Image (tube, rainbow, N blue to C red; front, side, top):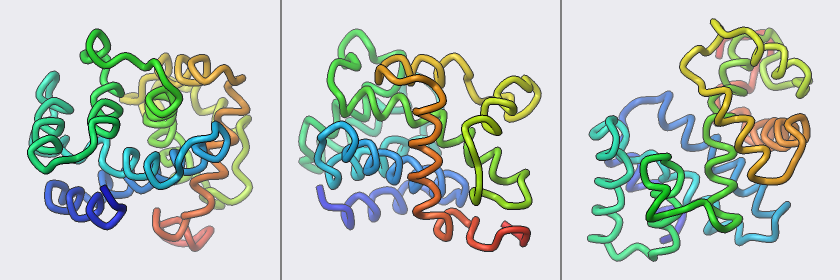
Length: 191
């Protein structure tokens, strides 16, 4: 699957601007981690871009990811991509474990990308100058971005064998590289 095919699939099934931005963020983080962990940036980026493409239509477990997998298979998408998409959901762990770097990275960046973006929205500087310390401070505030699972963020860092701060720094760096696409191109201005 090419990046263009992945983008067409995402936009065919996803109308929400926030979900599209999330997909772009996860794609950027996956491309970044491919470089860190010795993966194929194109493959890892595609996985990040489409990991939630079915969420708008099938948000509930286990339909989310499994309906997407069905569609991917119908379209002849490589099983490595399908398995990675399935592996990021806890309810699929028995059949599609996080047993390889691609799957570990997807799980690790998914929740953290959402959280880092939430932090950026409330900072006047947005992503500019963001540090792991500022993200960790917000992680301690249970009411902030309450839907984000903090345990998943911690488990993701552990799965990658990285200290949490280092993992957060990797994701911040990845998102800073596409800040305009994410709507953070004008610090102190509207998002």
